View 1 (cartoon, rainbow, N blue to C red):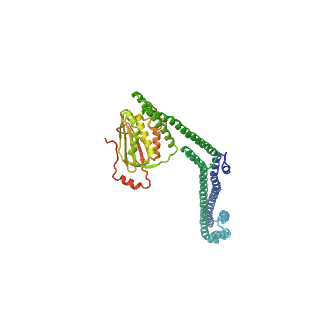
View 2: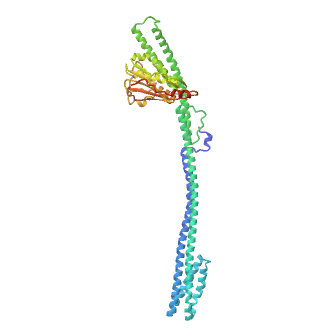
View 3: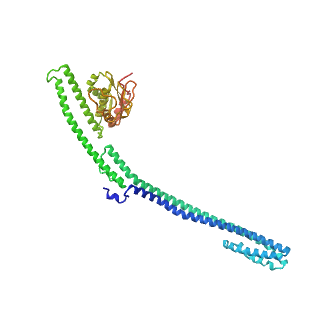
Length: 498
C-alpha cells in the first residue's frame, strides 16, 4: 500500500515521470524557439526592405546625375543648332528630373542640396523662354546644378550607410537578446533535467542501498519509505517483505544449528566418554585388535566433533563476529594446534617442521587458531602418507606471514577459483574414514578477513600445496613503542632453510 505523503507529489508510474520530465525539459527550449522565430523574421524583413530601398535610392541618385548631364547636353546642342525638337527633349528631362527629385526629398527632407536643386530647376525650366544670347549666357548655371546633383548622390549613399548601420545594430541587439535567452532557457532545461534525474535516480539508489543492506545481513531499523514512482515504491515494499522473510529464515537457521549442535554433541560426548572408559580398561582388559577398533572409534568421534565445531564457527563468522585482539606468541599457537593433531600426524607418518619462537603479534587468538587448525587438518587429510608438513612464519615491518605447506598431489587448476567457497569440495578425495564438510577453508578465509588479512593458495618450489596467511599490524594503546623496539634488528624467521 503506497503512502499518502508520497502520492501528493509524484506521478503514479515511472513512465509518467519520464514523460513529464521530457515535456518539462523541452518546454524552455520550445519557448526559446518561439521567441527566436519572430526576432529572426523581423531581422530578415528589415534586411530585405533595406536592400530593396538601397537599390532603388541608389538607382534614383544615379538617374538624377544622368538626367542632369542630358539636360546640359541638350541645352548646349540647342545653343549650337537651334532646333526646336531639342527644347522639347529638354523640357521632358526637366519634368523627369523634377519627379525624381521629389521622390528623393522623402529620403533627404532637410538636405540643403535638394532645396538648392529645386530652386535651380525652376530657373533652368525658364531657359527656353529666353532669347538665344541670354540662353547661351545662362548655360553656366549647369555647373553648380551638376555639383548639387553629385552632392545629393553622396548624401543618398551616406543615408543608406546610416540605415545599414542601424540594421546592423538592431541585429546585434537581437543577437545579444537571443544569446541571453538561450543561456537562461538552456540553463533552466539543464536544471530541470538534473532535477528529474535526481527524482528518478534517488529511489533507485535507495533501493540499491536496501538490496546491499539485505545482502550484507545488516539490520535496517526505521527505514524511511521510498518516495518515487509507484513501480519503485512497490519494489521497496517487496524488499521489505523479502527482508522480513530472510530474517525469519535466518532465525530458523540459527535455531536449527543450536538444536543440531545440542542433539549431535550430547550423544557424541557420551560415545567419546564411553570409548575413553573402555580405553582405560574399566570394562576389562582389551585385546590389541579391540584397542585398535576403539582408537578408530575415538578418532572418528574426534573428527565428527571437529566438523560440528567447524560448522558452528562458520555460522558465527557469517554473523559478523567482532575481532578481539591480544598480544600472543604465534609460534606457541602453531605448536598447540600441531599438538592437537599429533595422533593423526603419527598415524599418517608425516614429518613436521614448525618454526621456533618467540614471534609476538597482535591478533585474534581464536581466529588465528581456527585458521591454523583448518590448514593443518586439510594438509593431513589430503597430504601424502609419510610426507612432509611445514609451518613457517616471518614478520616484515607491518605484516605477518604464516605459510602451511605439505607434500603430495597439487590442487587442480579447476578447483583453485572456488577453493574458499563454502561447502565446495574439489576433485581430490579426502583420505580417511570420514568425508569433509567443505567449509574448512571457507572458515579459515573468513577468519583471515575478520582480522583484515588474507588467505591464499600460492606456488611453492618445494611443496605441492602451500597456503599463505597474511595478517596486518593492529596497534592498540601502549603497543606502539613496544612494537617499534621489537622490530629493531629483527630478521625474518624461517622454518626451513634450503
